Each structure stands twice: as structure tokens, then as C-alpha cells.
Length: 140
Length: 140
DNA sequence: CACGTTTAGTTGTACAAACAACAGTAATAT
DNA sequence: ATATTACTGTTGTTTGTACAACTAAACGTG
Image (cartoon, rainbow over all chains, first blue to last red; front, side, top):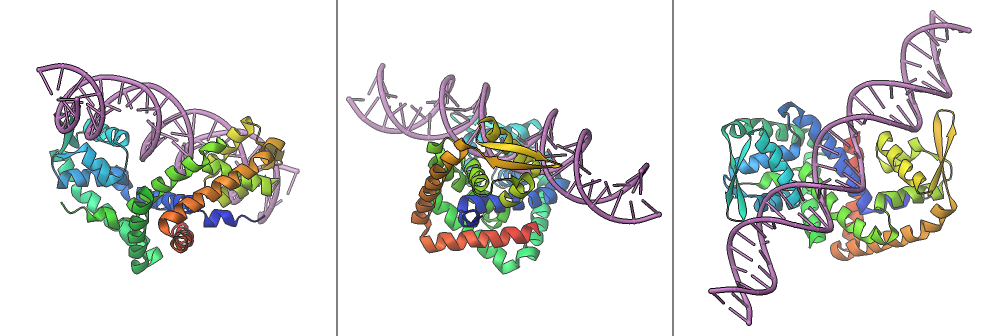
């Protein structure tokens, strides 16, 4: 049967890549005790104390509801703190969160190394920057 | 703050693209009453009557457990039929499933047109084929 | 043949992420 | 100054997907 429609459909190919890289990222982040997305969130908060949830959602490209759940979990584990400011919520790092920062940076580096070895350093960087450009166009 | 690590991390950029294209695909497939993944599954079954679940999982790049759930749902809606053959399960189309085939093809075409308009036809095709190559390397 | 090994599929469970509906606050317009 | 609109965040619910543990069939070797 002709199943070439799978290879040419961006929905399918993008999701395939997403699943492959997510699996790899989870493996590399496993030692931190958190999944990659939480690692990036904490890094953003550590690097921008008082960043609002809206800004976090924009940077991470997730919906506000998803971000609420993320912050809920991190707050429960005492890794970030919320401070309500009118209608917005500012998110601040905690001592514990700041202490974990480095392990996330290390995990990111291992992940980057691992996929760069498989794809080639140049190709990996080119791919990533293409994905940013294309995502922006699709989100319009 | 320097948040360039988000743009250069393939985990992040791949998931961003995945969410953007998934949203678009769901919009275009909404009129069929099914999400895109189910559409592709039905097309595979319609085009390859008796295909096994293993083969479907391989083609769709999902795990066997995920595929079991998909087939469960489609079978409940009478869109495919299971036939146990020893330890494997063959999946066959139903009349109803065959009848829906065309609407999935139409939805796929609309989706393809829509993202091609945004990305450029050439760029979209190039991107999709790059994603296939890169995914294969990551899955090793 | 019998036992262990591999393979295919299923089920329980968990998590990321979305949407829809809602609540509270801020900003704008009349 | 009040009413309306817009914005930010939360909660309930749903879906896609994975993994681990399991069952059952097939295969291979002593």
C-alpha cells in the first residue's frame, strides 16, 4: 500500500520527532528528578525572578492552564514561590530551586551532546533554528 | 535574562512545532469527527486490510500499548474490525470505515494546503523530509 | 518433548497538554 | 463614575502517549 502520505505530512513527521527527542530528553533529565520542561521552567524563574506566569507561558509556548499546573507542582515541591500582584502572578525562585539550577544545565548539556552526536553538530543547530522559524510562521 | 537555550534546544523547538501543527491538524480534521492520528490509522487499515497491530505501530511510530488504545476506540465505533490470528491481531476495515476514507483524504489535503501556504510549498516539503531523516537518526 | 526465550498484544497507571468555562482584576469608554 | 471590555489566572475535563507488568503464542535448543 502507498503510505507515503505519512512521510510527507508535517503533522506526522513533527510528532514523530517530538516523541523521539522527548524520550531522549527525559532520559537525560531523569537524574535531576524532573522532566525537561520543568527544568527549563526553573531555569527561567531562577534567571528572571518575579517573571509573570503570562511571560513564562509565552516563552515556553504553552497555554496558561498548562503553566498553572506546572507552577502548582513546582510550588508544592518548594522550588518556586508565587506572589500575587493584582491580576498577575509573579514567580520567584526559592533557595532549593536555585540550588538545583546547575543540575538542569548539566542535563541540558548532556542532551545537547547526545543528539548532536547522532545528527551532527551543524545539522542539529540548523534543524533547531529552522524549527523556531517554522513554528513562528505556523503560530502566525 | 539570557533565554537563548530555549531556541537552541531541540527538545524545546521540536515540541513547539509539534504543538503548533497538531493544533492546526485538529482544526482541519474536526469536520471528520476524528483527530488526525485516527484518520491516518483508518487510511492505513483501509489501504492494507489485515495489517497487524505491530505493523501499524511501526508505521505510525507509536508504542504497541498506544496502538491498542487507538484500535479499541475505532473498533468501538465500528470503524475497524480485529481478527485474532494466533498471537497477532489483524485489523480490517469495515463498511463504515471505508466510507469515511475520502473525508480523511480531504482533510489531509486541506491541512497540507494550509501549512504550505504559511511555510511555502518547497520549504514545507523540505522540512518534512528533514524531520523523517532526523527522527530516524534519533530513534537509531 | 520440555523448558526457556522471544514476540504480540493488553491493562493499569501516570503525565503532559489542550480547551472550555469561570473568577477576579485592570483598563477603557461612555 | 459607572459599565463594559480585555486580560490573567484557575479548575474540570479530555486526549494522546508512554512505561511497567502481565498473558499468551511461537520458536529454539538440550
